[in-house]
Amino acid sequence: MLRKKAASLIPGGAHTYSKGDDQFPELSPHSIVKGIGARVWDVDGNEFIDWGMGLTSVILGHAYKPVVDVIKKELDNGVNFIRPSFIEAEVAEFICEQIPSAEMVKFAKNGSNATTSAVKLARAYTGKELVLRCVDQPFFSIDDWFIGNTDISSGVTKETQLKTKRFKFNDIKSLEDVIDEYKAKGIACVILEPAATDEPIPGYLQAVKDICEKEGIVLIFDEVVSGFRFHPKGAQYLYGVTPHLSTFGKAMANGYSISALVGKKEIMQLGGLDHDKERVFLLSTTYGGETHHLRAAQKTIEILNQNDYQVTKHIWGVGAKMKDAYNQLAKKYAIDNYTSLVGVDCRPYFYFKDNYLRTLFQQEMIKRGVLVQAIVPSYSHQNYEVNSTTSAFDESLKALAESINNDTVAKDLVGSPVKPVFRKYN
Image (cartoon, rainbow, N blue to C red; front, side):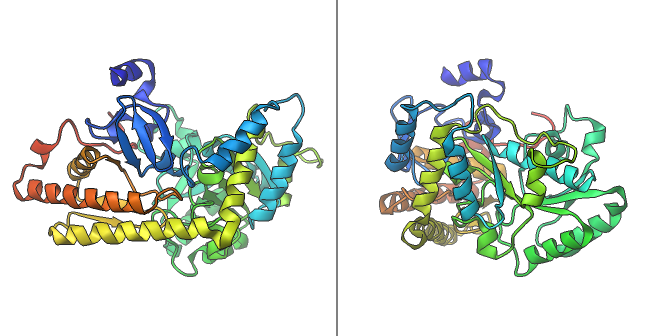
């Protein structure tokens, strides 16, 4: 009933396409009531182990008490005022001490705002228009400069679509070729995730930076996902390459809505008041400086910094365990050519030969009390969650193997298979 009601009131049935009905099996729970730690409960009272964790945003666990406590404290003092809160400058200084590329910072509420503002700033700084974005990485922004360069470009002007060009990750020649082809038209920036589903090969990120500096192009790292998950100081710290601008969000505040654009003062100050150049209307959001979410970010990052980065080590370790368990079981049931769990240990993803197999696997996991699209480890995924999920892997992969061997995958699936978000038609 709630599923139909949501679909009739909300385009797509959810406020994020990745949470839509076309991304999950028909038997999946539609509406969640609460989450605690690494578990969630639906409206019917069913409990599930959660491996999505707010689309990678919840790094400590749902309703993590130390973060909730600082939020409650700020709520009693009010969260949004006629002038900036003192907390804005305090947390800005904290971020600048934390992130290698941060000489100045501007807060917002979602990653799209931050990345689009980075692109605008790069265009203003260089006086050029073209954007080069990594084609192998799935998402940068809801805004036209990116969406117009995907299969779901309806509503974006042709002129805007032509302003964004593509290059391949871990392929320096691909970047060199596209720069050679378009530099006469004026390239403002190169934007990529420093690490996403795969890590950068040695020397790749530095080579990208060297080319950008040689050609006068602004280098932007989209760390909305990698930031704070790969390392508390960002993937840029982990891999030793500092971009000109970078963006953060997701795990920054353990699921609470805050993002950040950070970068070199020379570029960032164009969005400020202390220069005599043409003004850049950078980020101006009513809710960007909300005190409770700034405190949530500060507290989350403080926890990530503790005990020699204990949380980071934990999530990398959990991801490695899950990959090993899944791939051994896929081999046990002789379906390792149909599916595997691959990618970086702190955020592994599933490979399936097709979406019928993917959906049937998710369906079987749901039957066993596990919600899983990918593996997004959090600090709350402890031995119970790891062991329970491994048992569910075993039973679900056994069922998947039987369906494959009996050629009944489509028959055994209830409803339609999941679909890619970026597709031209429904």
